Length: 64
Image (cartoon, rainbow, N blue to C red; front, side):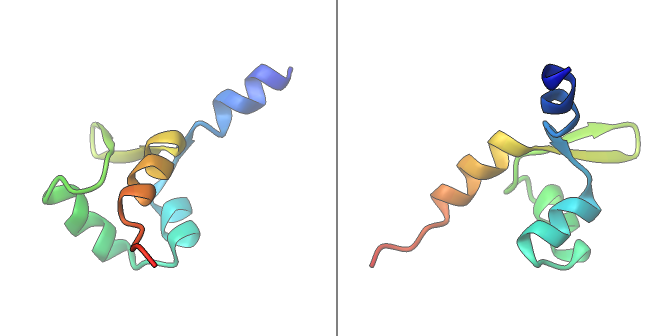
């Protein structure tokens, strides 16, 4: 049962990602069109793998 929950939370929708990052959906659409954020396209739907987004965010970290 826990495996199913992990699978369900593996991908984020654009709404979920927007909320998580506190970013406008238009910004996320721009990042996908520029291929600067990891994503999957399923027809017209965009999906974002949570682990890939976490890795991507680490590359955006600014050194102190």
